Image (cartoon, one colour):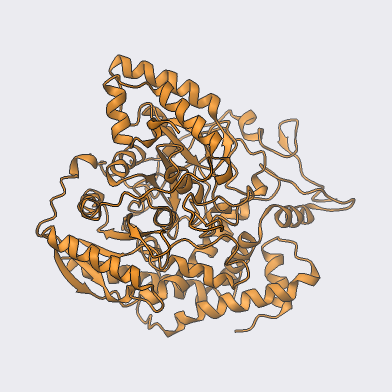
Length: 494
Length: 95
């Protein structure tokens, strides 16, 4: 594989600006690497023609000296982002053949900055899953492999994480509703940040649970995350929950100086059955931050235990409402109808044919918790618990905590198919450390921390105060320097 | 709480998802498991706590009440499974 694909975003940007390489060369290397990575099933829609045209345009801008940070950099786009004229299916059969006639705000911002889209990426259907196993395109596969088993890259942004970890593109967009950026980043040994709710526009991103969904970058390191997040973020009048705050220069915040910052270690994140090596990595991460001059403080987030059950009321409720639009009328699939079938049969058959099992399950759970007689007992109770979870965080932040350090996931990547026989609730538990952050609307970042005894990556998560992504990225930058994680998967797919 | 097949069928109907009679027992069991997991929320004291309605403490902003888009019939109909004469076409709704 070309040496070019080993570059990070920042390095490639600098080399492009210095005229040492061109975007056409870089894009070509990426497209070749993608072609060679078919066994990973990370890329699901070919956009190579668009990529080549974007690369030529980027080289012109570079020559003219008008090159924003992302100019000329080949990135992958999660299939959840609507891309004008390019298939966008949210990995669902129900959106088969859908070609949006508009561009999502986030991809538009990236393209306006000159980023090159080298393909659309695999994911869990409608972002509902933690293993990329609910995709209509089939499983994406983790580039990390330690025995004959194929491992999950995590989910829902499994294709994004697999593609970046395999170095087939320099970075990728992801979305995170309950951990869908941070968990796959942890499973594949890379970095992923979910910004504060409202930081990135949700406009043109296929909706799952609107009060939880946020877009963010999946990258090789913290500096790249800072660069790409800045390009994705910003106020958008087309998203009524987008917040009108200036976007800081996140990269400029990366000094690595965290002296005097207070890092909270929440006792509730020490869960039963957590592997010893994860405990050790967490403890190491804590000492590293202390050695870098941070003050370590034991904290309590008492309602943590209730985050997952609250999430599994709120997210399905919002999904059942959002996914009502897939009715076989305006876009996507319409089921084959029998003589005499009316409009109700059309809805019911289309939705039965078009949605996969996990999506149907969540729509129906959501329908149930919102239905007359249960709305108060389930939905309103879950929203009250959510308020308490948010208050837990507000309390520790007002007590002077700047960031919170936790593991990203309760274990390393598992084998594809291994969770198929178990109760769906077991799969939900993989989001135990990440889901609180979505419920409270906070920024969270996962950085690779080390390998477990099997040789698979594990991640540590830092949770920041709302709107303080700069500080969060800087703390992550300091942690990353100390952790000095450099392992890469062997390229068995070549 | 245990969900029976009648409730499962009613939920499927409300969600407009066709579920075969034969699959209702398994579906009811899945609902029972998931709702069992959710029941933990009953342990929490939520007295006096308002349901969270907004993640960020801001009122949804409003745009000016003016036409800002339009004349895009072709784009709107572009992805329709069945579009005729400038309309979405569906099976007969009223006799």
